[in-house]
Image 1 (cartoon, rainbow, N blue to C red):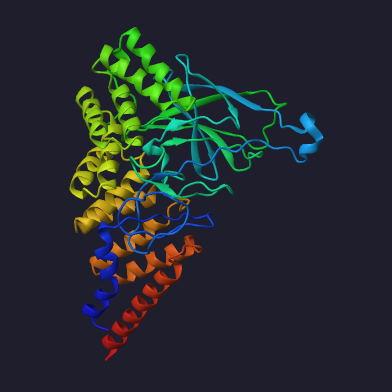
Image 2: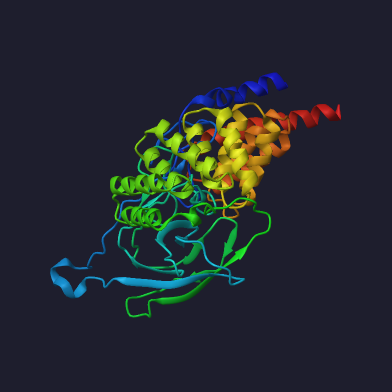
Length: 429
């Protein structure tokens, strides 16, 4: 087989760059391969091709059930409450409204905010809704491989698509679960939640945040810290409305906050997220741009704009925003590295796509998104690095054994291996 005929084997994957698809994840019994585009949600199906991009699909909140409903109230599970405090390792003031995440099997779910003194509390099993955060995807959770009821990942959701309010399901067991704080530019200590029960002391203690030196951007705007009291009050009311799944109320409060203080970058960003949820993309884009205008070091708006542009297949725009956001913060957004790689792949900027895919791999040690391997394999084909490409395809098949496109990728790998064998034999002659 010559190189031209081998290249034809992959042309379908390259041409599929403008299509939509869904992703698959390790640990999940279902998933789908997708074209190089943005996932539109759903739990199964899709077409094989270049990996898809997207955000986590919200799980349906589950209600604690009795083993035998006829036994009445005595068997209803008592609620499990969790509380604690977050602090900086150097004792510096904690930014307001730091997100608390519960991470089970590598899949993070936001469950609470800290108050002005760093305290937090929440109830396991009580549905709590948050606007999806780009940092929740791919890092053992972000994301492109969503949560299933078995604790793995479920279907992906695109930026601006579906419902970005994610619910926190109660599993009845805390095996492989831990608690952490999420703040861009900081590494969080974790607290093990194994075997927590209603009889335990709800106070889990202190979560300490440690500054990472290579992060230039911020996840909480410095200009937001200077907001007047009435603007801060409206903003915090908006966050509380999100906890109650009242996005319309939250939107009104965030609008009050930016009206009172036009430089309230965090309020603009959250307002933009709600508009994305409502598929009001232009108003969402305007809100994100106002957030950047208020604070150019705030990372979130760049990432959100990049994801939204990718969902609309505006690859040049997606790459520009994601490149900027990832330059400000290269460690907290593994999903953004993946989407950035997809954007550059579609733009035929294969060196840039290669770099971003490898950064995504570094931030995904648990292989929560095995389609990174497949994407990197396709990139390496375009760079004529066939042995390395075959290795990435093998990794994909190993980490995603139940993927619907498993047989197709296996066939592609077989063709690639045949070509490599023929090349070796030709070299001996």
